[in-house]
Structures are given as structure tokens and as C-alpha cells.
Length: 388
Image 1 (cartoon, one colour):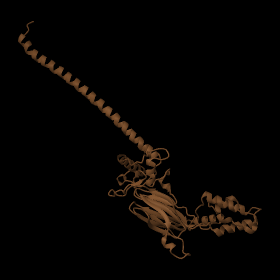
Image 2 (cartoon, rainbow, N blue to C red):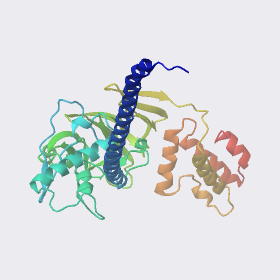
Image 3 (tube, rainbow, N blue to C red):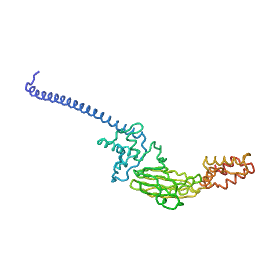
């Protein structure tokens, strides 16, 4: 075989070049992989640190929420500047929920406001030695109380929050009850009068011996305080009810029920985001619906249906009284379904809340059963009286 020596020498540089390029590529690729591994390791280490910190922060927040913060107010406008912090002893607490948290849920807004103030206090040693959370006390618990919170909170916001009878907090405003100076200066026979004060300024007065805060409800931009006005004595069962609507900048008052017998005012609907709340109660054989929606308050009244069935408890109460009317040992001189003061008022209340029930009519039924010693059977009573 004849080999072309020149051709061999011409191919050798190309082979060498190819080998050099291949070796260089292997070296570069190896270094690249090593560098990627180092970067990945550092990234994972940093993520572990971040995740640990995040988990710790989330845990602190979760513990704070579960420790008993009630649903609270939020700011109404971003331009509002929080009032100056209110010092208590050596510790400083915020006097209102920070408006910058208005887009958060009320519970989180309260927690974050307290956290911010607590962290600020660290710089000036203004936490008064209080830890963030500790059994039986702590900065957060006191902060939550200062902002108007109560613990434990209700399971549903629609149930409302039981208020201290003589005072309440609503969106940073302090509400108290006191005498009306005007009534004290009048004659001795003047009607007693009590007033509700907002931040020590008179908001409204009622002709009553006592005023009590009954419930507090809240939506995204408003707090609602339900108050009652009454007189003392077992015979005074007719109360006045008012609603205070607070937005953090001011308050207005609206009537819920006037001269209402043993009123049972309930929230039928509450929408937190749309600032809607609907109160209902029965009075004088009517259904009254008070609605606050889109910043407007309306009160509607409609007649109750006389054919409406009685609820189970009311039906059982009347049936028990009626059956007693026909008992042999009953004193026929005093045949009544309204024995004693409590029986009288409870029968009045049933008449007031059901269009198909008459106080006098029930008394006539009792006297008929009492004098004859016979009463309609249970099935007939349930059908004719209870309409069940």
C-alpha cells in the first residue's frame, strides 16, 4: 500500500486541534457543572433560612390570633392618620387600628397593628417589660383590649359581641354612660334621663333610669352598638332600643324599637365586605326590619300573618297552661292562663309577637275549660291554637 506522507502530515494538525477543542470543552463543562452545584447549594441553604424565618413568623402570628383576639375595626380611609398612642404605665399601646391594614381581615389588622407598635417600643424600651404573649397577660392581650377587643370572641360575627353594660369601644372611640346634666337641674318630678357619651362628648340621651350596651357588631368600615333604655321595677318590661353607627371619624344614632315589650332584636343578615347589616324583631303584631346598606338606614314594618304557626316552645307553653285550666283541683274562682306577674307578661308578649293570639281570647278558653272541667284534646289544640 502506498501512503501519501504529505496527506498524513496535513491531517495531523486538524486532529490535534480537534483533541484540544474536545479537552477544553470537557474542562469548561466540568467547571460549569461545579459552579452550578455551588450556586444550587447556596440557594438551598438560603431558602432553608428563609423558610425557617417564615415559619417562625407565621407561627407567632397564628399563636397571636388563636390566643383570643376578637374581630376588630379597620380604618375607613387610607388618608386617615392614626391617633397618638396611649401610654399605660411604662408600656405604650396603639389607640386605634392602623388604616393601612384596612384591606386585611379584622383579626389580622388588629394583630399587625399591635405587632407594629410592639416593635417600635423595642427601640425605646416602651413595652413596660411585657412579653408579646404570656399566660394571664402580655402585651398583645392588653393591646387587643385597648383596641376594643374582647376574649373569647363569638364563633360567628353575626352573633355579635357581648358588650360591657356600662362602656364600649368602637373603632377607637370610647363610649360611656352618664347622667344628663339638664335633667338634674330640673324639678324633682322630672323624668330621669341618661346619656351616652362618645369620647366624653354627649351623643344622645334617653328618658330612662338606665342605659346599657347590649351588643356590638362590625363590618369592614363600620361598628354597630345596640343599646337599651329602661326603667327599674318588675312591671317595666317595655324598653327603647337604639343603634349607634360608628365609622371611626364620627357616629350617628338610629331607632331600632320604641316601647318594645321584652324585645328580641336579632341580626338576620350581616355582610362584612359590603357593610350591610339587617336587624329584625316582632312588636305589636308586626315584623320590623331595620337595614343599614350602602351608608343608608331604613326601617320597614309589615303586619304578621294571623295564620302563622306558633313556634314549638310557645305552643308547648300555652298548651301546658290550658291543660292546667281543666284540672279538678283548680280553683274555679281564679281561672287564668296568666297566673303571677311572670305569667301575665309572658302571655302579653305572646300576644304581641303573634297576630293569631289574643290575651283575652286565651283567658276565655281557660275559663271555659275551668268551669266545665273539660278541655279540648291535645290534637285539637295544636290545630286550632298552635296551627301546627
